Every structure is written in structure tokens, then in C-alpha cells.
Length: 457
Image 1 (cartoon, rainbow, N blue to C red):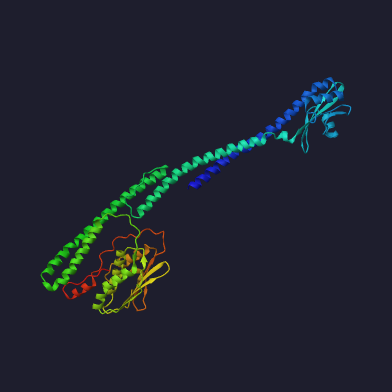
Image 2: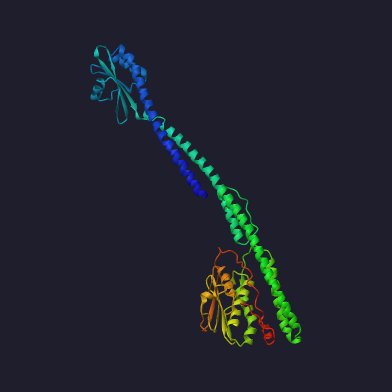
């Protein structure tokens, strides 16, 4: 914007300067030409009194010498003689002698001024004055240089003023842009001091109002999420009272219920915590995957599910938080245990490519009839809210990656979770808490008790 304003200022000022400089330059040249011709007329007029006294060639020669410009002045006498340096052709002199006014004739090196002078007895004398070309343009170059300098100063001054105005506008626009980027990155405390043109002042005030409104809305949503999570405590308390009457055989169920209550407490605490500006994070996907597969291996063994782990042998960095990646893996693996029959095999593959890292989770279950519908929140069917796949998709897209669902080689569904690791222009990965993590698979032994283990999708 600043460069554009500068160019517009230079263009506008240059056009105005040229509109005045071109006519002024032509006027200066005409003035120089007229001044040279007037000087020649003065010199011719100075010889008229001499011609009124004598027309003798010898005396005229002495008179021309006294002027100091005898090489430019000549006198054509009535009898055909002349005095001084003659340059005009005879026919031109004859034509001038028949007139009553001075005439000019152009030559290669300048102009000739021929002025007829009438004497007694009907005789006519023609005075010839030579005007060199340099006299016709004397001072023109200097005047044009001065005019050009004035024009340059005007353009530079206008450019300086326009640049100062442009800096004011650009500074306000940049400040507004930085504030918007900071707000988008999660810094809800950012505000700006509106300045600049009225339009940018209005935009700054609107930004501050929008930021205040966003803070209010997020605070209201946090309180709502905390309140909803708090309501879970009532049925959990009733469930704990029921388990307390079952005696020692329900100890595993009580332990699982305690962990579930701890998860609910964490949700309430996280919901009420003010949002902070996110930072760039990363984690070792191989380590997280090994941890979560160990987490689910006991439940797979209990359900006689054959599973295979491919890759994850070397550290593999991905630009997401370890907690968020763990929650997504738990949601995807939990879907297998929830939506496929016991004994259904599955495989987990970690693939590291050039600038990408992929996690492929495949199963031998019935598959997903409509993968596109499964990716829409609340549309996965089968008693699921679809939140797990939606959270996984948003986590992948936060790095520039994707989540795809297709058929696996085992005959069921395959979820491909791809992360981009070569992007430097993405914002920090920051997502709301995906929700409570599935219960520890080893607690699945409590299925034999009246309390069933809950696995969140």
C-alpha cells in the first residue's frame, strides 16, 4: 500500500509539473528568441542617424567599427555598394528594399534581420544584422535546468508527504492485521488503539468489540461445558453407592469408576481454565503409538483379537501435542472394539514419508458403508456421535494433513490419519480437549462384574 501511494503521488505530481513546465519552457525559449531579435532591432536603429548624415562607404565602415559588432552588421547602399560583412543574398536585399518594414531570413547558422531605411531623393538603404543561433537560445538551457530542478523538488516534496501519509495508513493496517493474527492464534487479550484514517479507526473499534464478544462467548461456553460435565457427577455418585453394596468382588469396578470420576474432574478444570495463546508443539508419534497399543493390548487379548503393529521402531516427530494424539488414537482404536465383533483382527501401521507421517488403522470388521457420512459430526450412526473421527480429522488438518477412510486389506475399514511435517507457515496446533480418554483396557476384566467398562468413540 505504501509503495502504491508513493507511485500515485509521483504520477500525480509529475503530471501537474509537466502541465506547467512544458508551457513555461516554450515561453522561456520564445522570450530568448524575442530578446535576440530586439537587440538586433536596437543595433539597426542605432545606425539610422549615421545613414541620415552620410552614405559614403568609407565613413560607414568607420561607423561600423565603432559599434564593436562589425562582423555582424552590414549596410547595403543604393548604388549597389556595401559596408561591413555581407551575408544576405542580393535578391533578398532587393526584396527588403522595396518594403517599408524589417524582415528576417533564416540561415544555417542563425537569422538575418534586414531593415530598409528611406533617404532623401527616394533612395533606400538596407541595414543587415546577423543573429547567431546561440544568441537565440541564450539562457534557455539554464532556465530549463532551473525549472526541472523546481519540478524535481516539488515531486520529492509530494513524495515525502505522500509517504508519511502512507506510513500512517500502513502502520494502522499492519497493527490491525497483527492483532487479528494474534487473536486467531488464541491470544484473547490482544486489543489495539485505533488510529489512522476514519475507516481504519472504525475497523479498529470493530475489532476490539469483536474480541470482547469472543471472550464473552468463550467464557459462556466454558461455563456451559463445565456445568454439563458437573451434571455427570450425580449419576456417578449413585453408581458408586450401588457398588459399595456389592462388597469386595466389585473392587475393580470401583477402581474404574474412580478413574472415570477423575476424568470428569479434569474436564471441568480444563473447561473453566482461560484460553491461552498456543505454542508450537510436537511429539514422538512412535512413542505415543507404542504406549497406546500397550494400553489396548490387554483388552485385545481378552477379546481374542489378533493384532499387528507395523512401524513405530524409530522416533517419528509430528507437530501435535502428545495428549491430543493419544486421545485421537484411543478414539480410533476404541471404535474398533466398540463397532466390530469380538475376535476381529486389526493392524496399526506407522508410515514416515517425505514431509508426511501416516497412521493407518485397519480392521477385519464389517467396514463403514458411507465413509463421507462417518466423517460428519453426529452422522456416523451405530449409536455413535461421530466425535472421534471428527476430532481426528481436525487434528490432522491442523498440520495441513488429511483423514481418509477406505477399505482395508483385511476386509473391513481402514482409517488413514496423515500429518504434514514440512510446513512452516501453519499456526500452532490448538484444539479443544477431545473429551475423556477410554478407560484402561486392563480394567476390561471388570466386564464380568455388574459394571461394564465404557469406551468413548
